Length: 235
Ligand code: NDP
Image (cartoon, rainbow, N blue to C red; front, side):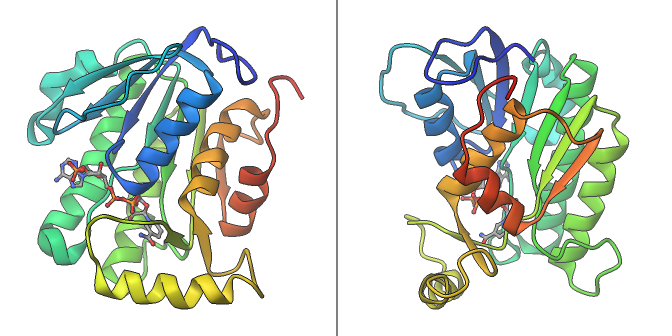
């Protein structure tokens, strides 16, 4: 992988799916701050207004996720692909949730692989299990399997617990859970929750550290550990 260790101007290229979301925004900040890649391409359904910054060139490609195969060019020529895509059942309905969290992610992974991407880094969830009775966990388990089957040189799957973040959109259940778990995190910091900034750092750090195999699955505790450390290339 052609990225540099940090703080510098990288040479490689990556794409980010879901850069407008809570984790995606934190990831983009991290990528820009660390200058790991010379070029970052945001692939999304709408254009974002971004603050001007020197260093990393950020390009945006607006795509129709229902016709993703027509946007194969957006996925071409990237060393690494980061995926923070996702919706909720309450926002999109059960079918919509499956479409976004499983089908869009799996299709994007296929296009990325066809376009030469070597390392795919994607968000799943704590408890993901393709045999679960719960739709959310089942879909996350299914998408994990589909993405693994794509055949990247490396595939990193992160399974965060409840994400701690300041969200503009109000999600009452998430708000309540975050507040309870924010307090619990004082006593069990790595068990039930994880700040999005930590997840973002872990996603980036996974690229820099030597691969632990073709597929790596990082549970919440491992995300905390990796997101705390800032490994340099080759260490
Ligand atoms: P957000 O909901 O904040 O962001 C989701 C991203 O997906 C946004 O960029 C959004 O774009 C995009 N998106 C949603 N629907 C569509 C669609 N129909 N078409 C195209 N793009 C779409 O995500 P989070 O950062 O909260 O979560 C990231 C991932 O982590 C998700 O997969 C989630 O399931 C998983 N996760 C979340 C947990 C939590 O506690 N919230 C816990 C564990 C895992 P736009 O801005 O245009 O809507």
